[in-house]
Image (cartoon, rainbow, N blue to C red):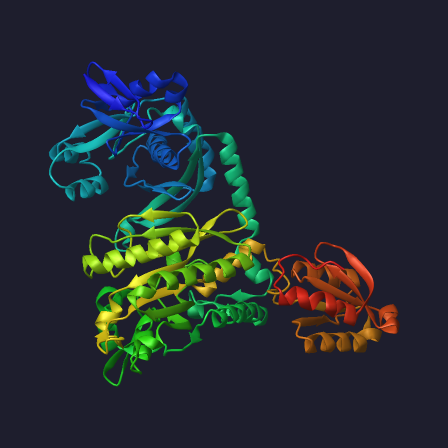
Length: 636
C-alpha cells in the first residue's frame, strides 16, 4: 500500500505505484486536465512519472507561474520539432525559458520574420496532434551515439557527469532535456514566434554564429492577445524613440554605450537629482564625491581586480595601473578612513551620485537600459550591529516616499546566505535577522530567495512596477561584511575598544540613466509638471506680440519655472501642435488681446483651454502644484 499525502493533508491510498496524473484524476477529471506537473516530496517531475513509495505531492497547474514556465519549456521543443520538419539539416543547440517566453539557438541558414507563418503553421499541426512527452534515460555513451551528428549536443553531453542522461520524445522528435514537460503538446494551446537574431554559440565570438529564434506561449489565447497589446503599447513608449522625439538624449559611435544628454534632458536630469538631494537631506544623509579613476592597489584591496577585471576600463599612468571605477564603494571606504570615528558618530549616511564605467559587449547595449557609462545614487551607511534594523527600516521608508512620488509600486525580496560566502554564522544570522525584522516592521509583504544573497552579506532587492505593469529591479539594500574587513574600518565603542562597523550599500534610483529610461516609458513622455524638462512654453501669435511674449517668459522664469518661447513665423496651430508633440504640459498663447489685458490663454496637454488668465493667477495655481510634486494635470 502506498500513501499519497495531498496539500490539504488528505491521504490517497494506492495498491501499487501510481502516477501523478492518476492521483489528479482521482481528485477530478477537470482538475487533472489543468495539471501541468507534480512535485513529489519537493522534487518537480512529470505527471506520468510513477510514485512508488509514500510521498507528499503538490500539483502544478495552468494557474501557477511555474506551470507557465514548464509549458513554455515544452513549447520550445514544439518549435524545435517544427524547425527540423521544415529544415532537416538544422542542428539544435539549447532552448531555455526566459522572461515572457523562450528561445532556441539553432545552427541553420539565416531566416527572417517572413518565414514565421510557415513555421507557425507547422507548429500548430504539432500542437493539434497532442503528442505525448515521453521521458527516457540513456547512458552517457548512448547519448553521445544518439547525437553523434550534432557537435553542439555532444559538447554538452561530454561536460555532464557519467550516469544516466534524460531525453524527451514527442512522436518521432527527440531532444536532450532534464524536463519536466506538460503531458502532451496540446497543452501548449497557443504559440507565437516573436523575433529572430544572431547569437554566437555559448556567447563566444570565436564560435559559430547561430539563429536565435524567440517565441512565447500561453495557456489562453486571450492572454496572448493581452500580451501582444502590451508589447504594442510598450513600443509607443520606447524610451529610445521618445528620447529622440523629445530631444532628451542621443548616442554616438564615438562613445558607444555612453549617452549624450541634450539641454532638455539635463533639465529632466537636474529635476530628478534635486528631488533626490532634497529627500536625502531630510533623511540625514551627507553627499560626497570620489574620483573617477583610482590605482590598481585599491582595486586589489577591494577584490575587484581579481573578480571584476574584465569589466573595467584601465590605463597605464607613469608606469602604474589605474582603473576607471565600475562602482563607488572602495572610494567610500577611503573617505571613512580619513577620520577616527566614535560610536557616537554612527550611523554615518554618505550618499554619492557617482559616475561609473563598465565594459559591456556592444550586442547587449540598449538605450539607457544597458550602457557603459552611468551614474549610481550610491549610499554607504556605517553603523553598529544594533542599528541594523532601524537603518534598514529608514531606507525602506525613504524608498516608499520616493517611489510613490513617481506613482511606482514595488515589491521586496530578501536574499539569504549563498553557499560561497565570507563571515561567521553569527554575523550572517544577525545580519539576516536584522533585514527580516525591518521588513516585518515595515508591514510590507516580501519574498525570500534562499541562497541568493551576495557573498559578503544578505540583501533586499526592490522591484518597481510601472504603468504597464512591468517590473524592474532598481533599488537594493545590501549588508556588507567584506569591505569593512578588507579596509580595516573601525570605530571606538563605549568600552573604549575598537570595533568593526557594519555597512549597508544601497541605491534607490540604481543607474540614474536606466531609471530615467524607465520613467520616460512609465509616463509615455508626458512627465508630471514638477519633473517636465520644459514646464511651459509661450506661443506668440505674431511678431507684434514678441515683446510681450518675452516679458511673460522672463516673469515666469524669475518665479522658478522652466520655460521656452516660440517666436517662429508659423501658424499658432502649428506651434500648438509642435508643443503637444514635445509633451510640454502648459502652452501659453499670447496675442494682441492678451497683451492689451496683460493675460494668457492657457492650454493643457489634455486639450483644455482657459482664456483671460493673469500671470499672478497662473503662478498661484502652478507653483503649489510644482512644490507638492502633484502628479496630476493642472486645472484652470
